Image 1 (cartoon, helix red, strand yellow):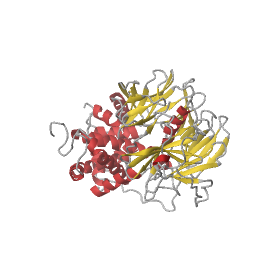
Image 2 (cartoon, one colour; image 1 turned 60 degrees about the vertical axis):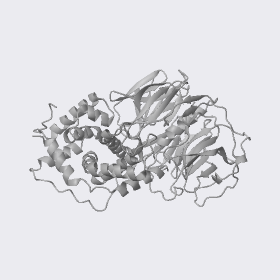
Image 3 (cartoon, chains in turn cyan, purple; image 1 turned 90 degrees about the vertical axis):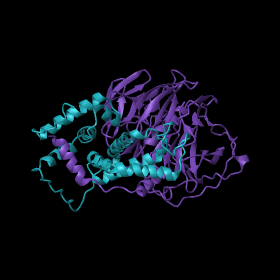
Image 4 (tube, chains in turn yellow, cyan; image 1 turned 180 degrees about the vertical axis):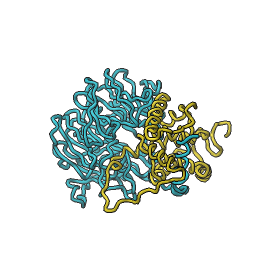
Length: 185
Length: 391
């Protein structure tokens, strides 16, 4: 970072050589996209939707690359876009439509590596409303603080706390002996 | 021990898709840049147009103003059966002497300033998403949108920027008495205000204002993803079944609802259906309620575009009669270009056109296309040189 607070190659006017910009962006992508894809899978519950959401988030980041001054907080910026894009998925009318099929899709195989305990937890997480699910994923997978989650989701820390509380109550209903280990965090 | 962490890690590690290539992301970025067509059902652009249209209601109509000569008079008949009536291809290569015209009679932003209808300029460097004049203060309420969040900014006439409040891109509309309807976020709750009335909408992941009814009730996007009516006087919300979008007309009370099946249905205040529409999207009613603007259809998409999930632009704009959808005129953007935004100026449409890195402002009237601003402005496809507001 130079004394202007901008990354090398970025001028005061926001202009930057395309080659330099692409190289910087590619480096960020290479370093972070695997983690972003994993988070997106948990937020969307579907690998294809996750790929779509992350592609859109990274594309928006690419378009805005010259305007993102604080390169230290890129992850938070992209997480916000992913969270918004995931919400967008749910508000698209065609997502709510069901299509009748002649043949039933292949059922998912039960993962029994831990006698089905993990699969049961995942099923319960998957059934949470989108906002509660996002809070659970960001809290217990990403291990973000309540303040950080509030920033990502654009809500107050109090809302994060209440959403988390409701989510855990739901999860405990289906998994009474659920151990979460982070309650005191 | 953490069962949730373990379960989520297991799922993430085993089901995450393969990494994307830089070319994939750049391709998506190009797609986002040019995806400026409107689906029939995504009516989010309607709120902006409705805002401006409602605002224009108090402006003098420029209908019949002959001071702006037509740039083209070459209507054609489109091939598809829905394109009845004259179709005007927008041409920008017109002689300079024909490109002068009256200033827009709606407030607009350009070159870092908000220009009021009387020519007063308020400095505001950031490009707004939309804005409207605050009848209480005489200043501007501006929605400023980033990639992740939108916020409401209050600006005085001399350009002093006040506090910002989290809001939504389409969280602003003008009510029947000129009061602003605004949705803001407060501690995880969304609060709707309209004039001196307010109402807690609860916790919404996302919302927008679709429009305001003649009695001041506000149509908004509810938590279930449909349209709901906020009856502010009764502090009550009423969901409108099977709807995803809505466009209102203050003078007539007609409301066009975008249904979940992709069609539109126009109803009057008694709930009677006036017409249905299945080939285009309803965008906005003209200020006097006589006309309706429709956007795009799948036969008129932007060449090369494969993405219909767009909030804004279209390659085709239609003007039809609001009462019975009779054709008045249709306008097609220049090849490779698109209309990004538009608003009613009397019974004409003012539209921004983006072609080959240049922004133009054109006036679309029933008898042809007239160029308001002959001097184009360079810019990027997602960064319009002009943004319309409401009065």
